[in-house]
Length: 399
Image (cartoon, rainbow, N blue to C red):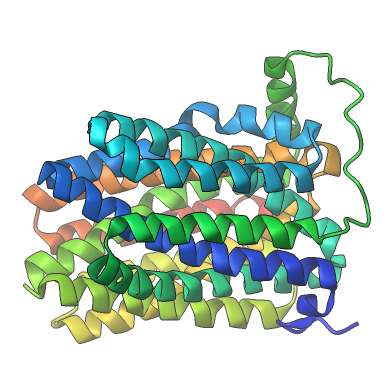
């Protein structure tokens, strides 16, 4: 069977999902620009923009594991359609509730992020039902690559749309993208329906604990999520360093931030293509190699003498990022049975989100008081140490 990067698109079910998600991610990035501009326009505060980011990440920390319980209880296709339609309505409300105070905007943004907790694990848990197992790595790679391309396009379109028509129109475009995604998902015919949960009468807490116990009892899943969480702290720290390098070391302003961000994104696209073409063999080794590669790129960033060399290191870091993200997703999918896959995906997402917030906050604070060369070299060394520690876990290394 053909397992090339684009082979999953030959199947109608995955193709419908991919088309819908590409458009939806475009809309999300347009919404991100519109939200940032609206909050800054209303408050005039960069701090408030930071609070908005924290609010969008908070639901994953609070409810992520429990959302996974319902992803396993409910039909995943129906869950995704409902989540898209609910989010479409909510984003349309944002510019109108802003008239009553910024607190209402935060509340709606919090609810939107909470609803997304059901969509993302459901999507990731359903992908193994849409493609053969030997195409799973390609499907995850294609998903990551197209998401990165859509983010680039969405940021550009969003900036132009907000500048020309204002943020209200941008929220409308995002709502349309959610409706389009729901329509595409409605065309999917899942060949293997999610089995009904025979223990649905049990409490949500009981099922959440059951999912966590399933992870703990599986050597590969336990080690994978643990190492991923540690790596995510340092990887997110790299994001904070990217901004600090552009703004503080190179004094390059917004164009410098855009250049470094674009370098990472192009690296992600190329990395996804490379991993997608490599197949699913030695996923654990690729995962660990990717973490080490990200650490090495951040370590090298500490000694970049100009922004162009920094862009090269970050481009290589983007490639390495896909080398650990995509194999991790594939291992989570194939190492978990269908009845708990939603909880496994949700737990992984929760750990990574909490770790990312910690990484951004800690490294951001360090960058204000410690020379960037020491911060970057320390973050890079930490990521490489995480890779070495993970390689000592035989089950993970040989998965």
